[in-house]
Image (tube, rainbow over all chains, first blue to last red; front, side):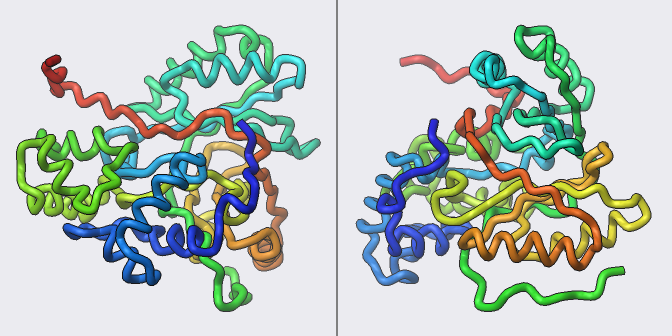
Length: 177
Length: 158
């Protein structure tokens, strides 16, 4: 699927709606009415717009956002491959068909430091189960023949929702230890 | 560790959350409990940090700019550098990973200029290179995550 959508698909009111939603839908009986009050539209407009943004793929998921670590999925690895263009589609096919893969992205290489261009996230209840899933993926063509690396997460310093709201001022310089 | 109601709330509405004036009432009907009980249970799960929110996961690149950034931070500085990277509102995930590039974080901002500014300031402040790996293509839509609760019985088929 294409990473970019026509700009016209998301208007100013959509943006205000999405910014207002960033902290989460209010846990109150009429949450869409509360969101609407905050941005000056009525409840039905909020619901219609959310439906349209979901339909258009701007919102790729609308619902309960679970924190994996806290619900028992304490292990996660980012697995990266150096995939030639000629086999990219096949490699993506293997990854997206695997239920253990939660996210799969193509990103640029940064040579010589970083030769990898395909990224997959794998979550599991333990490092052992995640390693088994990775071994399973690596047994499949074309991944079996490609250079890869595995980056397990260790400390989690921050995990929050995305914040696209424009800032009133630019970040200031701070003293660094 | 989670009640049956909590398990359903964690698993069943990761997507397709009701777009209805009373969404929690619609969920309550499916669970056979009251709207207030659904709201209370979600508040409890939020306090326990099992859920971060009920909300929208927005496709990268549609309402702003974002990137995945990585740094190779000397071990003795990692905690300090991680702490002030996390202090930016624009940084929403920040993990240590076991690799030479040991600090990985996602930056989102209102536009490309604001994003580049954050990258530049983090590089200047730390004196360390910041590798930016913006999305080229997303192949796997995040459809949520089946938590596979072991004692969750299959739903009766009508």
